[in-house]
Length: 218
Image 1 (cartoon, rainbow, N blue to C red):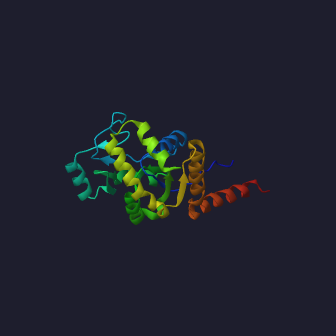
Image 2 (cartoon, rainbow, N blue to C red; image 1 turned 120 degrees about the vertical axis):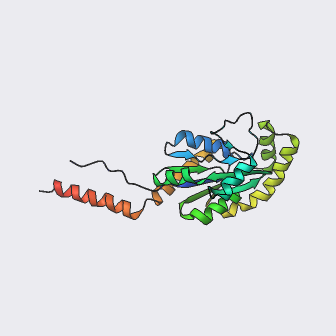
Image 3 (cartoon, helix red, strand yellow; image 1 turned 60 degrees about the vertical axis):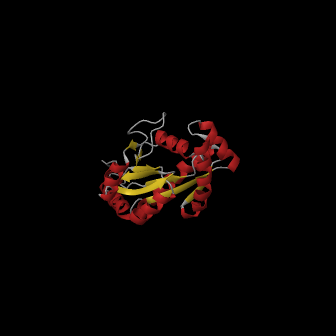
């Protein structure tokens, strides 16, 4: 009787970056809801928690001193300073997930992306999300109603510095329509999963397939 064989693969380190307000958070939330084999990398940050955020779900909120100890102790895969606050990715849970064949989603900026390129480029799939217009970006930031006018102005200024880094990413999405952008993001992930199944894993599958065929041949 032929056994049902799963083809093993190493997980993908999926980075989704964008200027604040371009739709990255909504797209990644949808991906986590629809894709069972994708888990979110929970970053540590020194930024104050927003009222809509949950400790250990959106971020792990730490003091600047705690962050420095993690960084200097080699416990972070990447770290960056964004909008005056520090963000970083704990190393151990990410490496364990990839080894188990799970994809790990990263919601980080271009600085963190560059660090992950240096340490884990073969595992990385990167996507940059752009807003359709500057006016729409400003509207989305204001509609969120979580930041002061001064913070919004700083985020728009930072967007002008972040957007040119789109060329450093594997894929780029212009988020005009959320549903269409999500369909494209999910399609990118599916295609990359198929590309990244290792040849030795395919060989094992084929060897078992041929062995089973021999048992069916008179």
